[in-house]
Every structure is written in C-alpha cells, then in structure tokens.
Length: 74
Image (cartoon, rainbow, N blue to C red):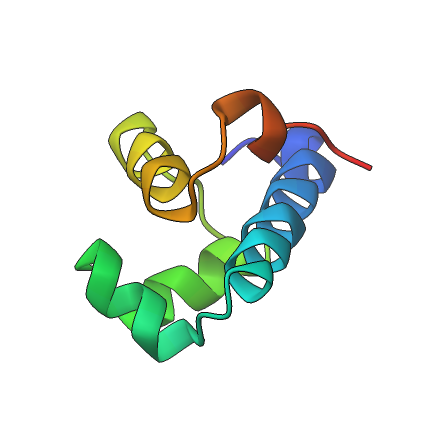
C-alpha cells in the first residue's frame, strides 16, 4: 500500500464501518456474511489494508449501497 494514499484508505475504512453499523451488523456478523477473517475486516476499517475490487463489490452488495456511496468520503 502506497503511503501517500493512507488517508484515503482510512476514509474508506470509516465508510465501511459506518455503513456496516448503519445496517446493524457487528464485525463478527459481517465477516460471516463476507466470508472473510475478522482481522481482515478490522484492518480494512482501520485503513491498514487495501480491499480487492471483488471485496469492494461484495461489501456494497451486502450493505445495499453503491460503490459511489462507499467512496463518497465525508
């Protein structure tokens, strides 16, 4: 992960957490839905890992949001 994009990854992670919580999912519930490890989701939400495009599409599908919404940083 390129350090110059670190802030963008943090903003993406905050959005993932925001929309997950808005749907009422705990991290444990959401990792089961996504079929990923809890530590991976935690790292994504903290902006420490970069998600694959496949995972981004799956997150959006399961949270019933568009990719634009996920990347609409506040």
